[in-house]
Each structure stands twice: as structure tokens, then as C-alpha cells.
Image 1 (cartoon, rainbow, N blue to C red):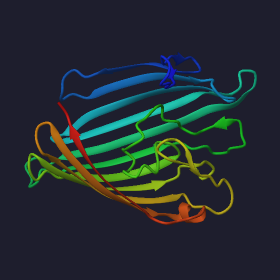
Image 2 (cartoon, helix red, strand yellow):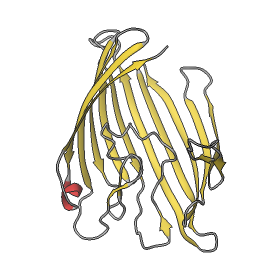
Image 3 (cartoon, rainbow, N blue to C red):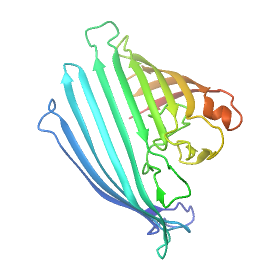
Image 4 (cartoon, one colour):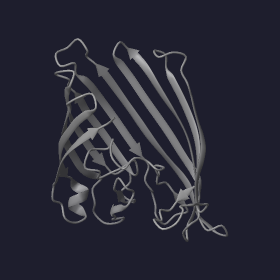
Amino acid sequence: QDVKYDDDKFNQSRNEEMLAGVYGGYQSNKVTPLFEAYYLSMIDIKGNNDIHRYTAGGRVQARLAPGLVADVEVPIQFGKTGTTTAWAKTIKAWALHGDLTQNFDEVFWKPKFTVAYDQASGDKDPNDSVSNTFMPLYQSTHEPYGLIDLVRWQNIRNPEVNVIFSPTEKFRFTPQMDFFWLESKSDSWYSSSGSVTRTKTSGDRNYYLGSEASIRFYYDLTKNIKFETGYAHFFSGGYVKDTGADDDADWIYSQFFIKY
């Protein structure tokens, strides 16, 4: 249940927002395929619009060849939104994740190459009785959809390529490239937190949001102290140009991890 922070009182959960579910997996040993399945119920009745959203999905991870691993996950969502006396919309949404990772442990700098694709449905018609917008449930607001946090697994198509190079045991770096398209032009562009960045449901607009190029560096100073820094640049695409200001964006960060 949702817990609201209150510095002056003992924090208590409230039943207006509840998440429940079951998640299971099976793998006979570390080199055989991993199978996972889940069912999640999310009920949100704290506002004027009640949401009863149910998510069922599965994931398979398998070793296809020495050093080559495939990972596929497909969730679907169903339920209703509206009020308890007059449900306004039926939920019918879906998402997809797939990636291939190849390790080259015998090659110079031991590169680990990954190709990934993420897609999540968007609403086809905001005026009909069906909501097709996939909603990630309580996901991390950072990664894996680029570093600048401009999108999330919601009304999106996102091919990605990255390589992890490990010149030494203590130092590694990761160049990465992401491309972003809206899955539906009739739905909004959503940020990593789920807020609406822009909406244009009619008139001329493009599917293409843009691309992001990034690089991250990691260095283990000691067993307990690690350093990380990175840079990313977003190249705005047709949808950004069709809906307002279309400047590119830059982001840089540095951070230490200290763990004892």
C-alpha cells in the first residue's frame, strides 16, 4: 500500500493505492534457460479517476551459443479506468523487451556487445472507450531508456546498441546509442517519471522523437570506493520540431559509491 511521508507523525499506509501480485521463475541450472512469469494487480482509487490495472507477463532468458545470451519479456495489461459507477475506459495494453548480448572474453578489452529493443503501446484514439497506453508499474526512473531520462516504457519504440569495454579489472567504459519513436502519435510523449512532456493529438507531427548518444566510465578506486562519470547528448527529432522548442540537450554527471 502507498505510504505518505510525514516528518511529524508515524507514517501509515493507505488503501487508496495498492499493489499485489505473484512472481515465479524456474531454471534447472545456471546454463539452462530461465523462465519467469508474473501477475500484478494495481488498484488506485485516491483520485477522481479510479484505476484497476492488471498486468500478466513472462520472461525467457536463454544461452544461444557460447557467450551469446538472449532475453525476451512480454507483459500485457487489462482492466478498467473511470468511476465505480461508470467505467469510462477498458484497458488493453502491451509491451515488449528483447535483447541479445555477446561476450568476447578472449578479445582485447573483453568487449560485451548488446543490441536491445523496447516497445510499449500507446493510445490509438483518446476519444474512444479503450485505453491502449501501457503503464510501467513503479519502475526505476533512470535507465535503461537512455541516460537523460527523456522517455520510459510507455508509448515508445526504442532500439539501443551499447558496448562495455574492460581495459583493466578496475576500469571499464560503455558507449551507447538510443533511438526513440512514439508508438502512437495519438498519445503523449512521457518522461521517465510518467509525467506528460508534450501532447499533440492532431495536425502534422512526426513519430520520431530523436536519438541519444552517451558514454559512461567506471573506475574501482578500492574494493569499497567506486567512481562513475558519464555524458549524453540528445539530438531532437521530427516530433520535437513539430510540437514546439526543438533544442538539443546535454547532460553530464559524476558520482562516488562508498560501501562498507
